[in-house]
Amino acid sequence: MNSKMAGGADRARALALFVVVVEQGSFSAAGRVLDLSPSAVSRAIDRIEARLGVRLLLRSTRALSLTAEGQAYLQSARRILADLDDAEHQIADQGAPRGRLRISAALSHGRLCVVPLLGEFAALYPHILIDIALTDTLVNVAAGQADVAIRFGPLADSMLTARKLGETGRVIVASPDHLAAHGTPQMPEDLHRFNCLNFNFRRAEPVWPFRRDGRDFALSVKGSIEANNGETLGQLAAGGVGIARVGSFSVAAEIASGQLVPILESFNPGDVEQIHAVFVGGASIPARVRAFVDFLAARLR
Image 1: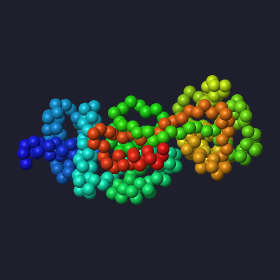
Image 2: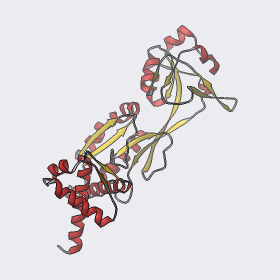
Image 3: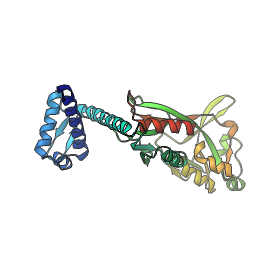
């Protein structure tokens, strides 16, 4: 092996060692995983820092913490190692996507729209291990917490790649029984005498947007229950508890079955939320990530 090849192999091993140290949280724990002494692990980190000329880890008697340079190095290390792993798997398996695919999706959208598609995807790509987490907490894709995350609404500026999967509108719904008992609102202002179920996200006050005669306006509403996802609010509305304004996808089944009825549609401002898949892009996107994003874009659109 020539010196250039040997140097590349040493750097790959250094990247892998650094990732293990960060994930394990200490030199001793990393040493147990790597079958090295804590001092050998510490010296290896010292050599990496000396070569780069920067401090990557801050050591204390209790824990290790990443510097800003260490965080950037960790992201690059994970991406490079994933690309190496993916390249080897593709060659070994004639290019078939494989490996663990970590997916993060919002609770309602994930359960209603993404999970029902996973069986088909698994059948198409039997060498991919699907690892999905449903949460309304934003995960850090750039830091390696997920390979693909599905996001709603405007995207923050970042180095991530985004692929549009579709969009969803908003609809105000109530059950037929609730409307029979309390009447049907004919104007947005009629909602003041109804129990309006709301999201519990932080904001100045709960308001619903409307449009009348080409002009947009917001109306303050009040209700007895708040929740963090549209599926829950839709279920409550279908149970006759009150009126909800939620994403159309979260109540599509209930509207189709007649459990919920859209109301005040002539005042709907037509606001939509775009849905994107976000992932680490670049020249070498892992085949499993590309396959999943292409699959979602085809099915969800």
